[in-house]
Length: 70
Image 1 (cartoon, helix red, strand yellow):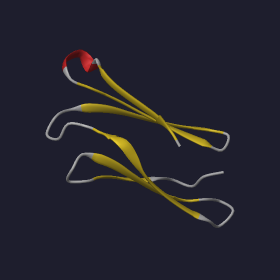
Image 2 (cartoon, helix red, strand yellow):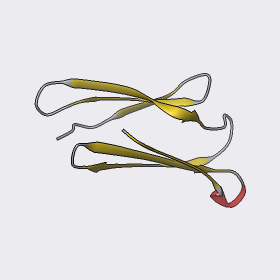
Image 3 (cartoon, rainbow, N blue to C red):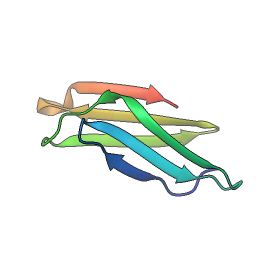
Image 4 (cartoon, rainbow, N blue to C red):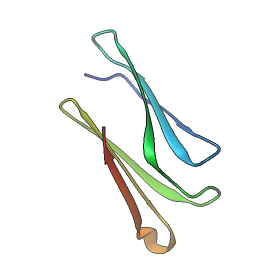
């Protein structure tokens, strides 16, 4: 199980996600994809068992799409 994530946007446009797991461990990951800076985007994060799914949509009508399972 996971605690509440902290999400940071790096200067290069990567998402850096940190969280403290309920069993006492810490987790920190960075996405393999970048998102455009100074633009609106949609961020969805879901937790499914032991996996974290990060999805972003950006661009006109949110048609630029990235997905990563961690």
